[in-house]
Amino acid sequence: MPTAPDELLLPCAELHLHIEGTLEPELIFELAARNGTALPYANLEELRSRYEFTDLQSFLDLYYANMEVLRTQADFADMTRAYLRRAAAAGVRHVEMMVDPQAHLLRGVPLADCINGVASVLATSLEDFGISAELIAAFLRDRPAAEAEEVLEQLLESRAPIVGIGLDSAEADNPPEGFVALYRRARDAGLKCVAHAGEEGPSHYIEQALDLLLVDRIDHGVRCLDDSELVDRLVRDRVPLTICPLSNVRLRSVDTLLDHPLPQMLAAGLNVSVNSDDPAYFGGYVDDNFALLRDTFDLSADQLAQLAVNSVEASFAQPARRAELL
Ligand code: ES4
Ligand code: ZN
Image (cartoon, rainbow, N blue to C red; front, side):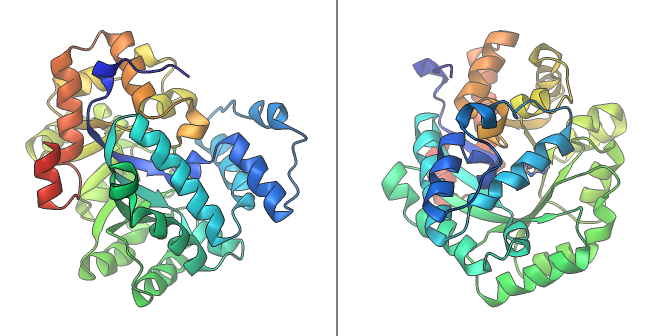
């Protein structure tokens, strides 16, 4: 793992992070042993050999399979603590992490065990790790919208400490338009709204997320570059796009990091930030993403600082915390 030089440790906010995507191979084996869960891999090396992806779905297959080791509240807490420890070293000072409660419910894990496990650690993350934290419940777009609506009701009923909702999983052929009622309910309940759009799906899914779901941010959004009018709109309205460079490389949205459009997006005046998505799967945390971007594109100190400022400005952090970080 490349270690970032000190000047790269910009205080930044991580806005696009799936907590289940921080489950490192070592922790997968540790939790499997603790819970007596059978793994289809004999050892770490065999598990690591599966981390070659051809597209989003090939990654999701492994991501959901590995979730099987998460059984108890303590498992969710341990995973969250491990992420925060690593993120603090990466320069993250505020995180808005997504969790997939629906995926765990479908496996028979009670909602409270998942939410309380993560939230109990986030409750003291500022004192323990110097990272303020918010939780976003993400829903699976390749499952029926009615199921997501039911889970949202349970989250609201149990007063789960979430700041907002998200939409993730397989994007192709699962457009935002199916989730209008879900997002209306969330907004009416005072929640913030984000959605993955324009990762593998077409640029008009980004427009749908804005026009129909009324999202506050777009996760990924790289495909906006296919539509110059959309780019103009995103710039004009300063819509935040949470970019995940290593994720885009590993899921083959771009051939190599050198082909990534991030510098172009910055130059166009888009509100882009740098995030790690599923760092245990894509080869690095936020500092690794920053270091590789800087080295690949020879980004200036000003450009790196702009990315860090964008992340704080696009966050849902409390006003006093935002002011501290800007
Ligand atoms: C995800 Cl990279 C990515 N895309 C869509 N859904 C996801 N869930 C976890 N990681
Ligand atoms: Zn994501």
